[in-house]
Image 1: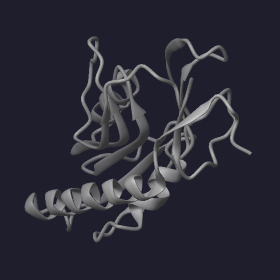
Image 2: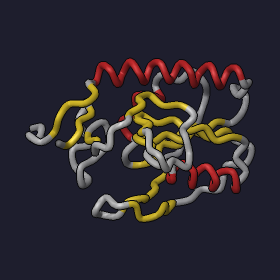
Image 3: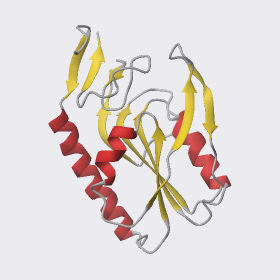
Length: 176
C-alpha cells in the first residue's frame, strides 16, 4: 500500500512519544499561567492537523472548546499561494486560542492566523505543531513543536499529504 518512492522518516511510536512530551509541556504552561479558568479554544488547522490534533488533544488536562479552521496556503501545484482563511469566526475576545498544525515551514500560516486572532480580541495565541521545519526565511516560530527537522523533504502521512492523498498513514514518510 505504501508507494515505493516513500521512505519512512518517523515511526508512529516516535511520534506518539513526542506528542506525549509536548502535551505535558502545554499542560504545564496552561497551569503555570493560570489559564485553567480562562476560556480556551483549541483550533486545529484543517486538513493537515487532523491526525496530530486528535492524538494531542486526548493528552490535555484542561477544559477547552474545539473549533477547526480551514486555511489554504498552497495552490494545487504545492507552491505557496498566500494565506486564505476559509470560514472565519469572530468569537475570540479574551480567549486563549491554541492553534494546531501539522507542519510549520516558513510560518506564514501561523503568523497570519495569530494576527487574525489578535485583531479579533484573543487574549493569547499559542501555536503547537507536529513538525517544525528549520528554514532560513521563517516569519513565525511555533510555541511548541514535537519534531524539529532540517530537511527539505516533502512529508506524507499522519495528516500530511501528497497531492491530497495518503494522509491516513500512521507514520511519516518522505518522498525520494
